[in-house]
Amino acid sequence: MADELQQWFRDRVGADFGIELTDGQLDQYEAYYRLLVEWNEKMNLTGITERGAVYEKHFYDSLTLALIPEALQAASLADIGAGAGFPSIPFKIAMPAIEVTIVDSLAKRIRFLQTVVDELDLQHVRLVHGRAEDIGRLSDHRDRYDLVTARAVARLAGLSELCLPFVKRGGCFVSMKGSDNADEIQESGKAIRLLRSELKYTRELSLPLENSARQLIVIDKLAATPKEYPRKAGIPLKQPLI
Ligand code: SAM
Image 1 (cartoon, rainbow, N blue to C red):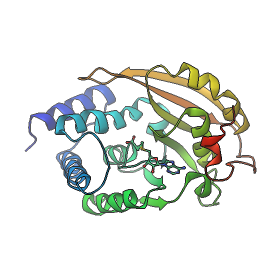
Image 2: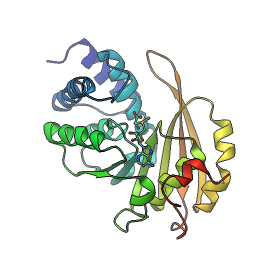
Image 3: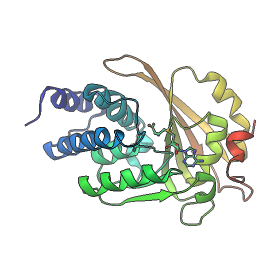
Image 4: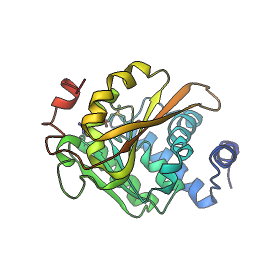
């Protein structure tokens, strides 16, 4: 039976995102929470371990993606630099039909995620170990995804070069940030243009208990990625296209 925190989470997700979570989905979030805390003792996955904080700052925060209509319509999602699985694993639990690909350059985080996928019995989740600059050049992944996400990975100009090559024409990239990204958005105009994309809109919100501000930045992909991008691994973040 759902305890008080799980009931709170179910109510908020229903009211704020219009998603009705089943008992089975609540069990999956709880199993994910337990694995996160257990593995965090052996490796650095997250600084947030208090149960209520994980539900709000990782699970609820990841689900804010559902405020973006394009995300709800997507059949495929690539999450770049997902770390311990955010935002894609909480989103996948809530939206089981979506196909998820996770790319992360740290092998041990991919090992953790493989355990999460196995224990939660998540279907159609592909885990790719590598740098986004290299993986985004492979035909399996380039210009392929309806939706690409990144939370807390890098500043938007460099991040755009890591993420936009994965987005198919007509799809979008949602960058999940804290508040006040006006400078970053301004600075990223050139990179977004060179990657044949355009800023569509931003969505502001705040977390329900902690009240800290968040911004979702939605960027549309207009055409296929030019062959010179992404540049060699390391270059996009060191020398962003600004
Ligand atoms: N998105 C997660 C979150 O919100 O909790 C993790 C954020 S963590 C600060 C950044 C992650 O990006 C790390 O797991 C790191 O290994 C990964 N990363 C950094 N640069 C990368 C690159 N070039 N390609 C793939 N993954 C990368």
